[in-house]
Every structure is written in structure tokens, then in C-alpha cells.
Image (cartoon, rainbow, N blue to C red; front, side):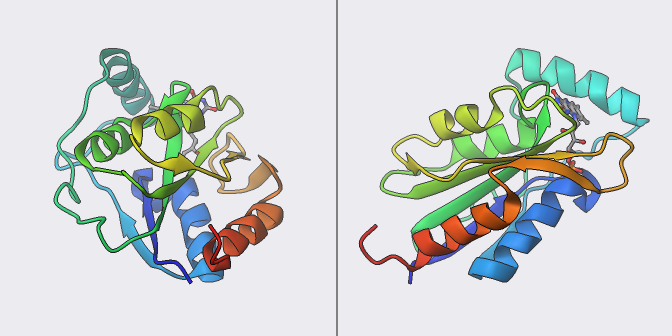
Amino acid sequence: MKKVLIVYYSLANGNTYQIARRLQQVVGGDLVRIETVHPYTGSYDDIVAQGQREVDEGYCPEITLSSLSLTDYDVIALGTPTWWYTMAPAMRSFLVQHDFQGKTVIPFSTNGGWSGHVNQDMAKLAKGAASRCPLAVTFDVAGTGTIEQSTPALTEWLRQVRNLVTDSAL
Ligand SMILES: Cc1cc2nc3c(=O)[nH]c(=O)nc-3n(C[C@H](O)[C@H](O)[C@H](O)COP(=O)(O)O)c2cc1C
């Protein structure tokens, strides 16, 4: 059985938290949330606009978990909302600050219908890691926390990740 860490960023413990929690219920492991040291403020539209500026600049905000040690973990699931077709800046900060050499990462993301290249971008930034079982989940745009669809289906993804975690050959 591999040691699992689930790291996620989610505005106000929203959609991405929902997936991270489901994953922990199935595979166990430690669940930790990245937070920005300076919280986003203003309206949702303000945050969308600030997010665009930050993504365009490749900005890495100051975050909690900067000094979290990954040494003891074999599999690290990385969850982020999609911000402007890629990861939220807080996840970018986490990825550039840590060493993923020899780890297996599982990138997962949530979105409102346009997932872009978020999972590929996370896999690329987790330098030295093998990337497995990516998942993108589309939530309704009204913000009710309802899942519209996911690729692959969420239950199938949970099964795949559980197999990966319990398979001693990997
Ligand atoms: C700054 C910002 C940028 C976003 N950009 C996208 C996007 O490019 N594509 C998309 O489908 N949804 C986009 N969304 C919607 C979120 O990805 C979606 O609501 C996500 O599930 C939110 O997850 P959370 O509740 O865990 O924060 C954006 C939201 C914000 C706040």
C-alpha cells in the first residue's frame, strides 16, 4: 500500500474540495489544502479578473504548505480549479516549490466547461514525477456544486486511483 497525499486548492472549499474529499474517502491518505497567504477579495468577477492577470504573468503567490515535506509520500494527488485554462496560481506556487523526483502524481481539476490544458500543465511542473490518471470534472456554472460531467467518469477514476495505490508493482 502506497503512502498517499492529496493536495488541493479550492476557493472557499468549493468544487475541487468536493473531489479531493471523495478521493480521500476511497483511497485514504492525508488531505491538505493550499491557501494563499493573502486571500482573494472582492466580487467573483474581481477574482476572475485578478486571476487572469496572475495567470498571464505566471505569478506565484505566497502560500501555506511551502515547507510541507513530501519525502514520506509515494503518490501525490494534485487538485486545482481551472483558472484561465490552466491551474490556479496557488497550485503553481506549490508545484515550483517542491521536489517531485521519483513520485507518482495524479493531476485532477475542476472547471465550468473549459478545462484547457490544466492537467498537462500540472504534470509538466511536477518535475521528475510520473503522471498518472488525470481527471477533469465539469461543474455547473451556476455555482451550486453540481457535477455536470467528468472524464473519465468519477467512479471509474476513483477505481483506477485505488488500484494504483494498492498495486505493489507500480
Ligand atoms: C479566476 C478564475 C478563472 C476561471 N477560469 C476558468 C476557465 O478557464 N475555464 C473554466 O471552465 N472555468 C473557469 N473558472 C471556473 C472554475 O474553474 C470552476 O468554477 C471550478 O470548479 C471552481 O473550483 P473551486 O470551487 O474548487 O474553486 C474560473 C474561475 C475563476 C475564479
